[in-house]
Amino acid sequence: MSEKKTSAWSPSSRELERRALRRKLSRKQAIIAAVSSILVLGTLTIILITSPGWEVVKATFFDIQYGKEVFPTVVKGLWINLQLTFFGGLAIGIIAMGLALLRTTKSPALTPFRFLATAYVDIFRGAPLILIILLVGFGVPALRLQGISSNVIVLGTIAVVLTYSAYVAEVIRSGILSIHPSQRAAARSLGLTSGQTMRYVVLPQALRRVVPPLLNDFVSLLKDTGLVSILGVTDAVRAAQINASRTFNYTPYVVAAILFLLITIPMTRYTDRAIRQRTQAQNSEGAI
Amino acid sequence: MANVLELQSVRKAFGSEVVLNNLSLQVPEHTATVLIGASGSGKSTLLRCINLLETIDDGQILLDGLEITDPAIKVDDVRRRLGMVFQSFNLFPHKTVLENITLAPVKVQNKSVEEARDIAKKLLSRFDLADKADQYPDRLSGGQQQRVAIIRSLAVNPRLLLLDEITSALDPVLVNEVLSIVRDLKHDGMTMVLATHEMGFATQVADEVCFLESGNILERGSAEQVLKNPSNPKTQEFLKRVHQAGRL
Image 1 (cartoon, each protein chain N blue to C red):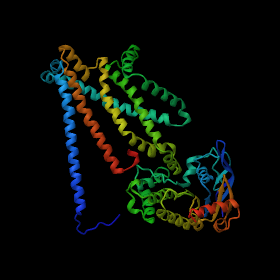
Image 2: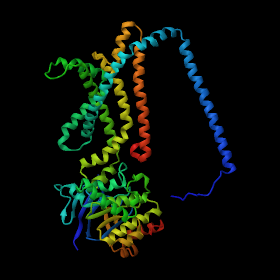
Image 3: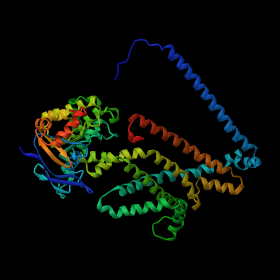
């Protein structure tokens, strides 16, 4: 590292000129940004409130009084979405990790499981979530198997877990495959077994790399838990629907949307920051 | 002196391209064998075959008299006795210098974390890297990274060290700090096989220099003999080109 000069330094006149110019330029840019924002947002607002149906929309979608009234029931429904996301997320993480490891292993004993894992991923990644929810929600109870719950919350969670574990497995697998083979070669030449190589060298780097797409999936998961409402689960979406169809005022939908946003926006902001911080701390290509 | 490593008529092909052709080599204990030759002459493949990162198509490789190319042998047990250093360092970016070095001693040799750390710290201070123990590899210069990679492979006490063009990815100023470690190891009596383009360095450490061309050793002998008075016209041609490139 170069030695720092302790002698007093004052900027040259040229440097002062440059700074003044930079300040001027950034002031100019700020003004442009402000003007353009006002123009665009202002135009959108004017289009919205001058539209012929605005008064009706305002009354049926943005009724603040009614919004306050339905708020507690929608929040109660949202609690179900959160629980579903949490427990579903745990199950998804475990199953997806197993699927990803199975699909990347070369162990001959696991060959049939590798095929099954591939089939599983193909099926549940390819079919619409709403169909899986309907099939599990109405199909499984029809089997009348002993010990299988017919609780719609449980069935809905199972359906979401089936689909999302396939998505997440593919994300983790792509992370595993993105680790350069030289890392594996280095680990194996140190005498680590293939399992140890996966656990201590490949997976930690792979998971770090897939944190951003995984968090996207986590946010999507929270939103998609709203789909279990079609089974009759009284989640936030269903609670809003019940209220809306009772009064023909759609404000509960807006309330539900705002509540979802209140959770998902900080979540994405937080994860962006966490990723950036770790990238700076480690400055490793593994965190990109 | 017993041979640590012996290659008997080794053949390796990738598809129709024969990379190693009927190649034989003996590496006695405490000696350094230097492989020279143009890129694509099979130097790296030879080292990767010894380390069982590639399977050979014919012939035998013996480590301390035991055939390691026997499919029944446990690959991990063989690799435990070999150290390998790569051209591109291949440090684990998510682990600190100390963690890079202690991983194999702890997980492969079942040493306690304290013991592994002691060994690692001793090696780090021996090679002037003690202050880098808790850094991540990306914060180090190329020369420092490669020195850490060498220490990492030394920490498991290898019987034989394989060095694959370990200075090729470094700028000329950093080459010497890496090569001086290898000189120290040679002085300690470490048995080594190394592929290099640094002819001056080869002269200093090599007990035997082998010139590889199209998967075969065309000329072998002492550094003096092969590098100063090559008898094979192809060796002469190769060395002339190296000389023109300013590497001799």
